[in-house]
Amino acid sequence: MSYLDSITHLQLDTLKEIGNIGAGNAATALSLLVNKPVMMSVPSVKIATFDETMELAGGADNVVASVYMRIEGDITGNMYFILSLSQATRFINQMTGSNQFSFDHSLDDEISLSALTEMGNILSGSYLSSLSDFTGMKIYPSVPVLGIDMVGALLGYGLLEFSQVGDYAIIIDTDFTESDSKEEKDVNGHFFLLPDPESFDTLFSTLGVNME
Image 1 (cartoon, rainbow, N blue to C red):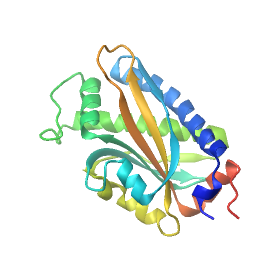
Image 2 (cartoon, helix red, strand yellow; image 1 turned 30 degrees about the vertical axis):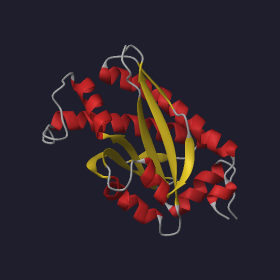
Image 3 (spheres, rainbow, N blue to C red; image 1 turned 45 degrees about the vertical axis):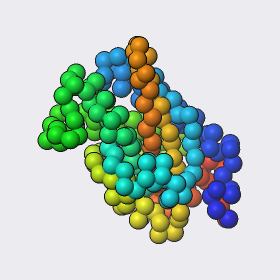
Image 4 (cartoon, one colour; image 1 turned 90 degrees about the vertical axis):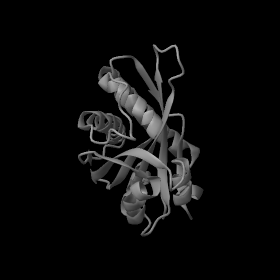
C-alpha cells in the first residue's frame, strides 16, 4: 500500500494547518525584512511523485532559485523552497531597496543573494519550527544554501537519497501577498519536503498514519 492510498484528508489538513502556523510566524519576520506588511498562507498540501514534483516546479529543465536545508534530529531529510527567477528578483529588489538586481548579470551581488537566502531561511525555518512544536519532535535545519539552476539538478540530491526506497515528496504551496500594494503582487512558492525513508514513516506515524 502506498502513502497515496493511506494518507487521509485529515492528515493532509493537519500538515496544511502546521504550514499555516509557520506561515503566520514567517510573515511577521518577512514583513520586517521587506519593511511592509506581508500576508502568507498555505493553500494546499499534497503528496506527489517524483515526476509530479518536477512538473510542479516548472519541469526538470526550468531554471529556478532554491534555498536548500538539510533536516536533522528526530527526523532527517531535505527541504527546498523554490521560486521562479522573476519572483525571486522581485523579492530581492524589495529587500535591498534597489531595482538593479538581475539573474542575467548580478550573480556576483553577494548582498542581494544573501537577502534571498535569508528569506528562504526564515520561511523554511518557520515551517520546521511549527512542525516541531506540533509533533513534539526535535527538528534542526542546517545552514541554508542558495542554488540557481535547473529544477532537475537542484532536486537531484534529495530525490536520489529519497528514491532509494520511496517515491514521494510532500509539497507545501505558499502564497505571499503584499497588503499595501495597489498592483498585483501575489507570489506563489513551493516547499518540497523530502524526508529520508525511515523518517517518512516516523513523521506520518505522529499524524496517525500507520504503514504496517
